[in-house]
Length: 545
Image 1 (tube, rainbow, N blue to C red):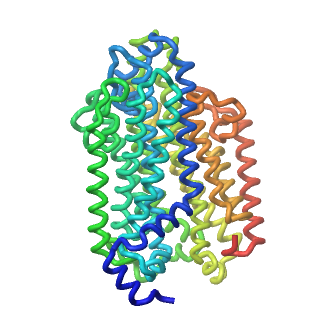
Image 2: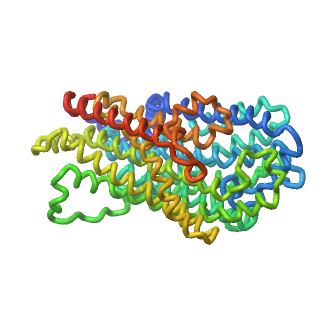
Image 3: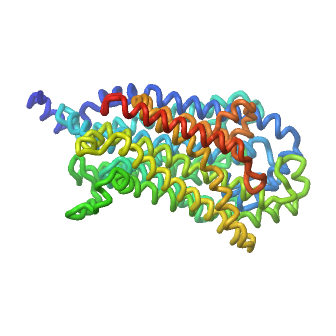
């Protein structure tokens, strides 16, 4: 039933009508997501602080950590360094934590904004809402306020986690929390603009994530030029909160840049929204061919067509990332050779720093094919929710053939992406060291992670086939693997917790020799999970979770 004419006329006079109601709806929909993000960030900061306090116990250990800030690789991964002459515990905390907190807030904000704007339009639900007395700007306003609430909660969690450390100045702790929240808002606003440009949620998310990646690289290159931040660093929103000089020489004014950028981007998003039709993007999609290629008539061909965009984006981005960081290997070895005293404080094989660094780079970039493989499997769930899987089956495709074709494409693309990111790391290290042998060695090293990647993809396939309504739980092992990989040692996680990550069972090649037994077990586990997915998919109803 349509809204009464009087109510609709009121909504036209007030473009923000029903913002409060939509805000309550969004907060209810995110009643689990926002607390999970908040708890994860707060727990991560608290765990990191506990580890820092037991690791950096003397001025000598802090100065050893400070000496690493002369190295481009460290600066690229952490950010600018202040107060190196008298490196305090607070300065070290800022270097270790700030960048990753800003990245976490940015990713959370992008996902939430796209979820409540472009994804709602794409599904058709926004059109139903707008048929009610809802102002044209109300949905976007409610989405931004929801993201503001989420960022405020995350920022507060950061401040609360730091409050237990007596040696940290509360003002800088508050600045770190505020910087985290404001950085999240900047990229939430970026996502709001991207939602106006793109017709699909995936495109909006990809555009916003690309801006985040560019901001990371610009900040990294700018800080490498000058380890306290160069002119180039100021073009990145990630650099602004870092330039507050936490626990060294606190200054608040760089945060005004984040607030101003957020306001400007939100105004731009509103202006762009006025220029487009509901459900459409400002960027006109290219018309497709009049007739489909024969390959598209098969499930595998259709899967390849649907996944090729995300596959290309992930592959190119991961390749460039791997090559950029691999090229820093040589400078890292030189820094370690000049500072032998670091052996007392850093658990790295100083006898062969390049090999250790190359192994670490491969383990980091392998997260890209891991995430892609799970998202590609779960894309089939989205196709089913949209009713397209049922249409395919109605044309005569078998359930087994459909799932087999889809998983075959995912497997092929994952193998290719894994090899490409290993190649990127190898080319980077080869460029930095002048040794071309690294190219093939690191490509093979990356391929040793395929069984671990297959296990996570197998979890997604099993959940999709057996209990599709719980398919999103396939992200749990991926998230845990990333936590173990990036923060496991820092948080001093117990061995049993580390072993819950499939990546933890793969040897750090080429620093260590590959072990056949764990790889065989991972492969067998993946095969069992995929078989369970086939069994469930053949027996359950399509379109019903």
